[in-house]
Length: 363
Ligand code: ACO
Image (cartoon, rainbow, N blue to C red; front, side, top):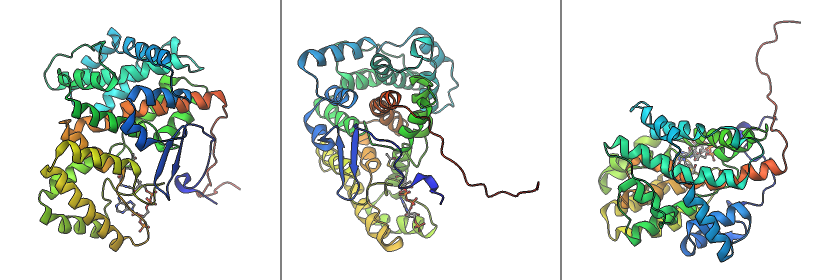
């Protein structure tokens, strides 16, 4: 038996998150992720995912202090980013810059401090590159700002409004962790060879880059822009499905009902944009796509995934498409690091087998 794409195969035990694809539930360490996203801060949820329990006040303030102290990029990393070609896309820059952290201080076995160093550095790398690409000088982090607020500040050079901050924070909490997805699997496979945390996260970033995984939201924006007006949605989507193309932002390997993250984000997107034209169009496209997917792919249970409304939230807070996958990655760093720590604590190298279907020439 060959399990293409390892579909339906359980390969680790984890205490980090649980997905119930039939009921549309995502649980982080025992708590509903969509409820956490509306009631907790990024740092509180990150602490929970990494440590398995909510922090005390003292633990949270130490955690915040450490994250803030690791935000300033090493000079060598800044020089490296400045030296990279302008044509390199932002995920390629992020992957390369993270890889430059891999000195001896990150040797196996991974530690919580190593994880915090990388989690804190990623938003700074994204912002540094983005500002250079936009012809602006990078700005240094502000100590008094929380993780999400500081990321916005370093990108835009100004603090977000409360609504912008909350929308971005909701998205980043919902993107933080998601079981054995492709990039998390890459990270666990890499560390299972007793390689280091930097290598594991670099593998994950390379995997996240693909459009079937984290690269979908910019494709969603392209689709929404291609449709332009509500009355074109039906013909646009029909044409794609007639050609056998996939609709970005729909379908999920695990969810066979609405993705709970998409539902929570849709609420935020509506809140921040009010009766915004883009959100109105997105809602119409969602309904049309679900109806047509059922017509062209009956019984496949294809619904909206997190990427669809991630695109809408990003647009509402004025983040351009180039920032979508890097921002997703900045949040998912928490999940990747938690999985790497878990794998290293109870390790067995991943080594599946392959069925040979080539010729047998020699006797
Ligand atoms: N549009 C049209 N048809 C689709 C879509 C889609 N978005 N997704 C799946 N299908 C169809 C397939 O063509 C296939 O049809 P068939 O049975 O006639 O061959 C059937 O549904 C099953 O497809 P699989 O690829 O086996 O489904 P799987 O569950 O493995 O795929 C995936 C999951 C890769 C996410 C897929 O739904 C997809 O490509 N979606 C579009 C890309 C996207 O939105 N990615 C973001 C995912 S969320 C995340 O990574 C954070």
